[in-house]
Image (cartoon, rainbow, N blue to C red; front, side, top):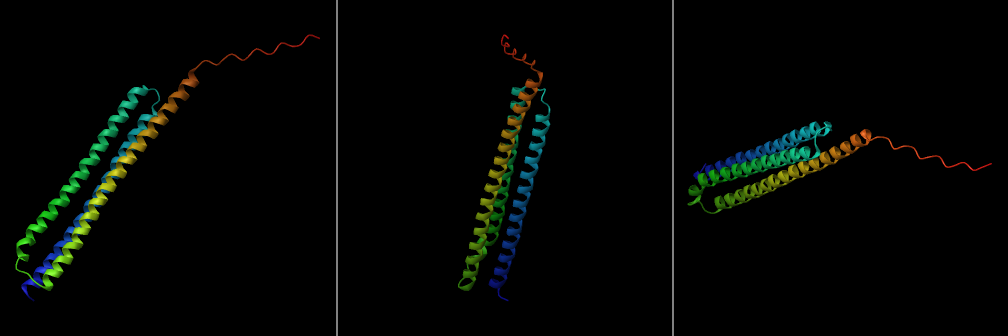
Length: 176
């Protein structure tokens, strides 16, 4: 086996490792998005079940939690993108100098493998963005639904506490 064939095999093996790492990064990000939205949903449920609190205070609390969770999702997406970039940089640094003397079919294999890897990286970056946007949308929907439920519960509580309106006076009976 020639040095170039060994190099192609090493390149393909490294590309497979990076692909697996990208898949793991996406899976981890999706799990964290799910965990974050579930945590926020639980806060929403806890907050909206307690109708005795002030609406303004509740809204501020939910808004603060929403912003905190959105920030956490964005930080996780940034970390995922950073991880992807680091893996690609390690990979290209490892193989860049070794390919300088390769030619012919070896270069064609390298080029095809590099293109495939690049496409996987771009698809992963798109998945990261899609996952983070979906997580933010879910958080926003939960916030809006929670606040609407909170306002409805407050209105129901106020209606239950309001004194009953006196019944309308019966119409005067006609004289016989």
